[in-house]
Structure formats: structure tokens, C-alpha cells
Length: 526
Image (cartoon, rainbow, N blue to C red; front, side):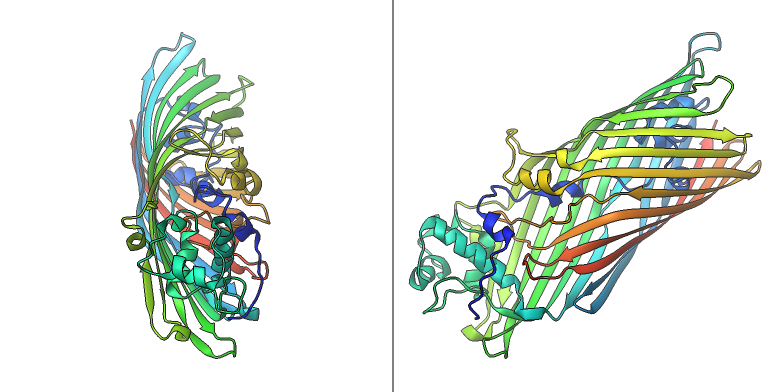
């Protein structure tokens, strides 16, 4: 072990954080994928002022007020998600293709009369997958300057032990490493990942040194698999007033299901540059929960003789009740100690006053504001545009009693206001067939200096700073007298910077992310 001092901001702040949830946990549930009916996706979702599609009840609820007949639709398709990483000159790529059930919904149109101010009262329901978490990712390479995750663990242990008054290698051996440790009270105040590192030799306090130390890593590898999504159920009521003003409200109910497995491996060198075995940290994480929000919208035709429309919608925060469950396993075969070690977090915590393997908490997302405009030209071309804003930094992480979680400050400091621009058009080629195209731009959610501050019982050190996203869409549509069918293709692309651990000298893995989606919708209007 080399006597290096790498004091990262993550290590310095670790003891101040009281909860494992931070900006990265909040951001995971913020924003939406562009998904719904194939017509909606094919036009880039830019239908907030145009209305007349089942999916608009999730963006501008007043759009359902445009309907003058009943509608039912079903959508399904395929998703291919890919991530290509470049880390210190080593490139890796993972991709995954899965079938998906994306949407089902209906609109019931209730005509009031032609001579009354209130012309229609419409009701609607729509299910769609608002976020898709399915993703495979890998990165790895040869590290410069012997950088290692073990030094982050060592710094955590150093600061933690100073706080509880454990000093010297002898105390470290007696009070931290011993499996039959009688000093369990110290574990309640020390970072569990650092303690697991001490149990497996990933960190140590060698005789003659004045601090906990890590190792030099000459190569590493990271792999993660994410599955699940957010299912959104929208219940809508909307009103048509004199065919000039349309009002709508949508109650949204959300079901969250997220699973993640990650594995990080390092091959180590000793002080003389020789191979010295290595270690693997596996993390298992699930997140489940439900949420609810309310969306209100209006569409106005300012000129009676013109099809031009203006729309405005506001979405209340989504109030999520969440439960996370996690476990971790750290194993090593470091030659320095002459044997292999394996320590599971769940086994380690059994019978001790340190059970954080499940945790309930609440997330309140920001308000969302949407303005839109749309028109038709000669009954043959429809054009729509939307702008949406949501201030991610105003998200609130709280425990079940309503108190802010310890790392709420990371949300305030590292998340930003997110801008979303959507444009789209539809052109009727012949009476039965149309073509569509759309584009979305979504600005970055994270500040440039964002990082993952580890709490006392955090066990994953990696984090991924996503940048702005571009989405391109194309579509085809068929309209019969009753039956209709639509096809859409969507391509998402964005870059991100991935860090397997936090160190001031560590370069990020540069990641190119993409998703291809092919979407089919069949429906009937009657």
C-alpha cells in the first residue's frame, strides 16, 4: 500500500449525510420518456394545442376536449437500448432489445348540444409507460497513477474513525476487522462500505502508518443491469365551450418498479508494482412505490375563423411514496493477506442495531409548466410546437414523517431547471394515409460538478452525469371510416460522463447512449 492522501469532497461530506438518497435517486424519477400512441410519438409529442389524441391527456388535459367521437387505442412495440463507453482509451458496448406493451386507453365523448355554451363533456383513461429503465452498461480499462476505489473507502474510514475516537492500527484491528467484534457500537457510526472493506482487506491500517490506506489499481471493470419502469395511469375529464375554449383535468397515478444490479472489479498492485490479486463489489438495489399528481390545461382558439390554437398546462408535483431495498457483497483475494475474504452486507447486519436494508421515504417532484401552439393548413397539414419547464432542483426528499433527508442539499446544488422543446408535423398524402415527423430537445439535468456523496450506509460509489438529449421521430398513419393504424419510429441520443468512484484525479468514462423504439398502434373511432 502506498501512503497517498486523496481527500475528495465525497469523503469529506460523507459523515454529514444522514440518508442514502441524493440527487441521483431523485433525478431517476423526474421527467418522462416520449411514449404513448404511435401518432403522438410520430409527431414528437407536440400535440398539446392540437389535441385530439388519447396521449395528450398526459401533457395538456384540455386536448381531450377536442374529441367529437369515441376513441379506443392499443400500442405495443420494441425497444433497443445501447451504451458505448470509452474509459482511458478502452471502448466497451452493451445493448438490449425487448418487446414492450406501451399504451392502452379510451375516450368517451358526450355531446351536450349545439346551441349551448357547453358543447361536449368528454371522459378518458390512458395507461402508458412513462419511463423505461431497461439498460445494460459496462466500462473498464487501465487506470492512471494507481487510482483505486479502495482509497475512497479508506478516506471514509479515516474520517469515520476520527469521529468515534478509534486511533492506531491496533484499535483498527480490534474494533473494526474482527468478525466476532464486541464493539458493534462503532459500526453504527462508521460507513458500512468502509467497514466491509476493512473486513476483506480492501482497506487496512498497516503498522508504522498513521492512517487507513487503500491499494493501487492497474485495471478495473464495471457492469450494471437495470430493469423496470414507471407505469402511468391517467383519468381525464374535459370540456368544450363553444368550440373556442377547451378545459381539462387529469388525475395521474404512477407505479414505480426499478431494479439494478452492478458489479465493480479491481485488479491490484502491491508497493513494488506486482500483481496482488483484487476484489469485487456487487450491489443489489430495488425501488418500488406509487405516486399521484394533477394536471390542468386549457386550449383557446383566439380567432373564430382560424384553426390556430394556443395551449397552456400546469402539472402539480408528483407525490411519491417509495421503498428501497438493497444489499451488497464485497469479496477479495488480495495476496498480501494470503487468503480470500467474502463479506455480505445483509449477513453483516444481522443481529446488530444497523438494519438499513430497506428504507421508506418520500419524493416530491417539481411543478411542471407547458405552453403550446398548433394549427392546421388546408385540412392537410397539422403543425405543433411545445415548450415545457421543470425545475429539478426544487425536488424534495423527505422521510415518512416529512423531515428532509440528509442529502437534500445535493438536490439543491446539483440538479438544474430542465427545458424541453417539442416540434412536430403531420401531412396527409391521400385521404387515408399520413406521414409524420418530430423533434425533441431536453436540456441537461445535472450541474457540471455533480458527484455522488456517500452516506453512512451507501454501498455504491458510481454515478452517471447525463447531458442534453435529442430525440428524432418519424411516423406513418392510416385512417379508415372506423379502424385506424399508426406506426412510429423514435431515436433518442445523449452523452453522459460515468465515474465508477469519486476521486479528484479520475477521468470520466465518456458514454454515448441511444435508444431505438418501434411503436405500433391500432384503434377505432366511432
